[in-house]
Length: 325
Ligand code: SAM
Ligand code: SF4
Image (cartoon, rainbow, N blue to C red):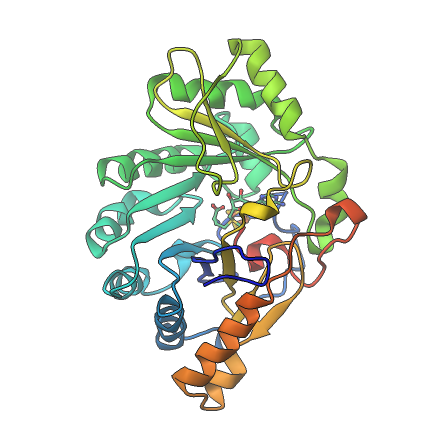
């Protein structure tokens, strides 16, 4: 369906949980995170009902995210149920990969098409510092398991944070020489209670690209589909691709094709704006499919044009782990 700015909106990002087994410095505060009580989360049945209704509105791509989606119970049957919906063309998942070694294969069998994996450094010590709980080795095994299971093309996401991992861009970019992986460097976005840290420690996409070019020479630009937030490049002789996601310094709101469903049952219309449509309560009050469809369609039509970072407007109601990136 189209929104009031005539953008075609057909991509749904579903946050399966606000819980996570990491505490990445750019995403969650170390302490004091208040999780939504389980009773305030969409049940599996409610979640699948919303996705099914949205699929009849033209949503044909679904991405599972979180928090950490792999900590949601029943993940495999959830994937299976989404894959069985006739209008859904693609199911992907964004994960920290800690649990992926065990479940990549069952997820692929259930109908998951591909994964984006967050990995911010190849240095084990710095990995634990930036994720606070993370173990690099397990994540690496998760990436290889995903590749073996055919969850390809593998995309890797790195958020670059001043003072934590800006030096690691080079080793991460080098991975694309040997592997047919898509490596994407992400500008840190400010949200919620840790916005001050995020603003202070941002590394811009231009700086990231300059660092890569200093080490490897001019990047070869590749064809871009206009919707992916990262324009793709290749290193000379590389097998995979590189991208730089400049949400803050050069937003790409005109190509936006997505909305987000939070685990507490709200449709979030723009990642960096607090406008949301409440769905959980109407569902529990007995709304019919037609009524929910109307609520969702009206919300999507009214999707805001873009974020307000240029005017110093920072969305405050949620941190990133409560939306899903
Ligand atoms: N736990 C999963 C993971 O880390 O891949 C999925 C959820 S996480 C919120 C989704 C994506 O958001 C990850 O790629 C993560 O690196 C990114 N992210 C988290 N906080 C961010 C921030 N402040 N700015 C930009 N990206 C962020
Ligand atoms: Fe967890 Fe992902 Fe946020 Fe890291 S980025 S704390 S893995 S939700």
